[in-house]
Length: 441
Image (tube, rainbow, N blue to C red):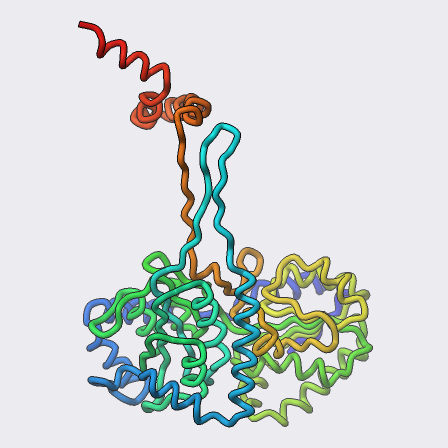
């Protein structure tokens, strides 16, 4: 990991390199994914079977492709009661938060008498990718499926890799709780291609969401336009802004909460106390040896972990906006003041008692968030990712007479004569002229 001091002469250059470090896949991944997509589009289920045998160690056939609703219900019923309650708590809070996001239709008449508005409608089908390789995440299934159901999506399809044919029962239980309609034993870029183009077994969808590895992210990027996607997600990120009044062990644990996801994940601390920075670094090492995920977390911390010491935390929002991190924790006495300066972040966690991990599971807001500095221009997953807005216009004679001449003038200025005539022929002067010509012998 690297320790940076904002007062050092080389800080600006070092920080610029940190901001520019995307930690994402290269051209070799893009080429491999392109080949996989083309194969699935050409051969459908035969290609899926070949890829599943190659990457997951089993070859589905017949009814083996699909995980039944009965299997999902059985997994839910078999849960330890405390775990079932935890899933239900998470689902309830996620649902309540996202129900408040539902947009309202508009329908009004303006001063000319023209009726204007917009109607929101859900997509017909949504596909959700649920990882099943390095780790299986029932929380991600809830975070993707519940907003889709709240939006009103009628067909909700989950694809998930099942190494050696097995699937995490917690994922099945979450699928039951969220009301998933279809669940298929297929993962990787090939699953994204199947959702986009359809195969003999899997009908295509309109939107694909959900996290995955570099191949899944690249497949979503390449297929955007064939289908809608939530975002192109990269490795996880956390930025913690902390003063010295924190327990350094707590902050170390927060940093590792994202490092354990992936060796390419990134954890950054900004603090105004050099001694506190050193204490956190020491506690990171102490916490690492306690983790069953130590290997991935250590690789992430040693390769990408960064601690930045600033003269004052008032400088932190500016640095945070340049980083535009997926998760930003503000564990400082003046957290609200610092929050006011944050313009670019996927999600912000305020105060010493709000670890990022609570947002991953039970707080309510979505944990599918932009990475790789994309928080500069995009937001976390919401019900709007599963909906689209259709505007509508209804003009009467008076309304068209009031604004039509302006449309004619603009169309003529653009050289689009048919546009101009389609409006002009309906205007009162043109109607009168036409009627006069028709009445002449």
